[in-house]
Structures are given as C-alpha cells and as structure tokens.
Image 1 (cartoon, rainbow, N blue to C red):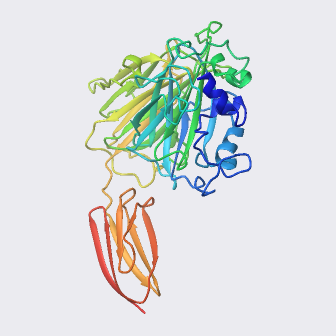
Image 2: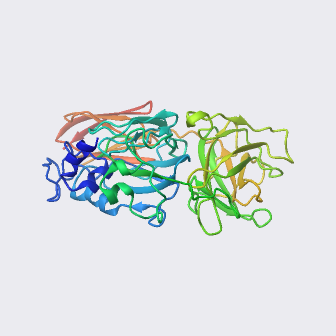
Image 3: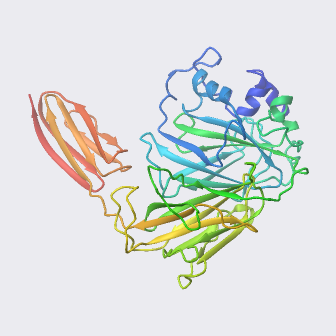
Length: 477
C-alpha cells in the first residue's frame, strides 16, 4: 500500500489523495488544477439525489470539515456530485459509531424504502482500519476503484438509513498504528500531518445510491485514537432528539409534563422509522459509552400504538437488530424498555416499527393538531442511567392515509402537448406521442407536467402511469 500511495501522491501531494479516496487514475476533471481530460465539464453539476449525514451532527468545531476537498472534488474536478460534504472525525478506539444518513431526491422529497450502499474503506483512500459495518468486516482500501466492503441497507419511512460501525480489534492488522489522542477534535489527522497512512488508523466511508457524480453524498472519515486518558462517566446529562429531524414544518411543539418539552409528529400506520437520541454533558461534550435507557409508550403517557423496537445493531458486531414488542397491558409502567450504551458520539439509535392496521384520521398538514379523541400514538423518551429522564418526549401519531388516486391529463396548445401526471411520485410512467420517441418519466411531485413539442398532423397520445392509462387524439394545425 505505501508504494502505491506514494505514486498516487505525486498528483497533488501525499495529504490529498491519501485522504480523499478518489480514483486518481480514472477520475476526469475540468479545471486547470486537475490534469485529466473531461468530455463534459458539467456532468456532476446536477446530482439526482442527496445523501447527507444527520446523526451525529458534525460541525467545524467537532470535526475537520474539509472545505478544500469539497471544492476540489466538485468544482476544480468533476469527480463527485455538487453538494458533497467531507468530514474527518476522531473516535476513541474500541467504541461503536452509528451513522445515520438522510436520502432525498432533487425536489427534496425523502427517498423511503430505497437501497443505499455504504462504500467502506473506499478505494484509493488508503483506509487501514479493519472495521465491521453491520457485522461485515471491511478489508483495507484497495489501490484501485474497488472498496474494502460495500454494505447495503434500506431507508425507513423518512428516507433515513443507519450503519453500525464497530471499531477494529487492532489497528496494526492492515499496517496502521493507533495514534495518541488529538489535541482537539478539529486538529489535523495524523495521515495529513505525516503524509503517511501507516501512522494513522482510519476508515473512509461514502454512501451511494446511483453513483459518484449523480449523488450529492457525504464523506465521513473516522480516525481512531488511543482513549487511555478518557473517562467514560457522566456527572450530568442532557438528552436531545437527533433523528428524525423535527421542526416547525413537520411537527407540533406542546407543553410536556413536569416542564419537559413534548413534540408530536405524524407517521403512516405500519411505518418503520429510525430514531436517535444524543446525550451530552453540561459542558457540551458527548456522553460516550455510558448506559442509556429508551422508554417506549412511557408510563402514564396514554401511548397505545402497537410497537416493536430495538437498538440498532444490538446483535453481535452490529450484524442485525432484534426487536421486542410493547406490552399493551401496562398503563402505569413503560410498555417497553430498551437498554444499551451510547456510542462514540453519545448517541443511541433504535428502530421503531408500528404494527397497527388502523389509526387516526389523516391530518390536513404535518402541523395540524392531533385529534382530541381516537388517538393512536407511541410515546418515546430516553435518559442516561442514574439520571432523571431529561429528553424531549416524542409522540408519534399514526394515521391511516387515504390512498391517492393517480390521474392523467393531456392538453394541446399550438404545437405543444402538455401531459400532467397526478399522484404518482416515484412511479415509472411512459408517454408515447405520434412522431416522438417513447419517453419514460418518474414524477417527483404530486402534480408534475411534461411538455412536448410536436409537428402538424393528427397525434395520438398514450400515457401509462401507476396502473392508469390515458389515450387522446389531437389535430395539430
């Protein structure tokens, strides 16, 4: 690996390509800073989807945010989709890390039930940490476009997907070494300081749906360090919801009990969701590797939804998640209690599955008040063991959605035919017009129009979408 990396470093120096994990031999570019030719300088400018990290939340203060890499990879060069972000972050050796990404399309709509591949120890990155991700061991990064491991998972109802990354057993397995603790969380990583990955222990990961140029995805590079000086105890506890991201556009803040805040949100009956709470100390630092308890259908809350839940990756090496069911006979006690330890970022991440078949009436909007009667909801909270329950109370209200009926219209004005498809988001649809090549479209909005320019004459328009078919004839003059 060292010799291969030295050859690669000749491009822009040892620091750059040992960290970025790009295919230097095959990756084209369009700026003067990139020595490779490119046929289309804009082919990475409009990615079809985004995959951004939402848990943990990485900032300029708690990680190394590589704005320089972002600019070079997406602007100077055209290797990755515009909007990509790159963070290097320190993790104590021996701790687990759960990364949760949010996937959305160009319209900002969450990509639910979508396969996302996590590229672990990405090719060319010189990653040498033998991590396990969702139970699968990753080999060191090859000196080509292949990866140490590719692990696929499916997004939940909110477009979120989680991966459990288990610390390597030994940093020397693939030629690395365990460095000392950094002076600060935003200090340059050893591989960057020394221009030598053998002085570091790190794993670079990148989520992917369609491809490097067509995804605006977040690089996360985990750098392990010696935790000997750390103390995994917490003298104070603050617990906050990280995932799903709830704000004034998609939830309702209401008065909680005993001065605790409460937030209400809606989900479809039968929804599967990833939920994450983060514990911090009073000084703002993460409460790492400390026991934490998650309460589902909190005692005396009225929570009555049928739920199965489990901490993500609670099987060996994070290989799978074992779920347990709520006990509906309990009203004055929690119906389900999950126990585990916070990860390297003070986060506990769990899967929340609704098993009901009937729910509340569908709300008019995501911020509509919950019904006075007939509620069907799960009540959630979390606390560090030994501390009073301090998190926001989260109520997930389940409703039975009225099925949306797909409809199609077609109109002709002058020499333009406009086809409008309603309620077929994400459904592959075909448009056939006399004299034009058959088109396949996939709406990203509830009502989406497609305009086609035609010549004079009789035109037959046939549109097939989500089981519906429309056929119309127009005489174009």
